[in-house]
Length: 107
Image (cartoon, rainbow, N blue to C red; front, top):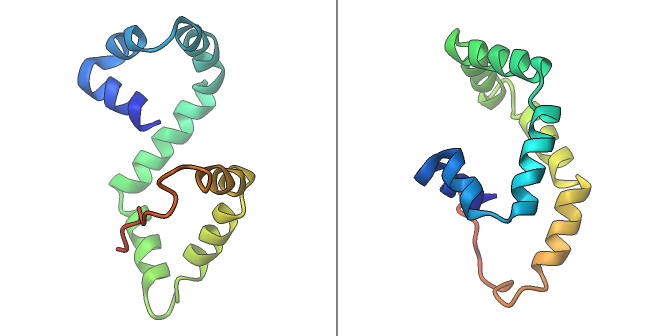
């Protein structure tokens, strides 16, 4: 995914499409409109609105406070860690030659 994002950042969608396989480019044209729908756009606008009006920050700060005890944050983290793509991805990454290297940044 990083490669695709880097290609878009460096040369836009046209440059990214030039740099990937014809199969991947075809998939972009066919699949993109199925994923980025009017509902998706509405949801993205709602997320942006929540950021702009402070709703996101208020919710985040409340959950991170002593009173919130990061309950919601930790529950979401646990659910995300148990997602099949994470479970399988971890198994696959362990097969890589660099698997013993620590790649995480603790913030």
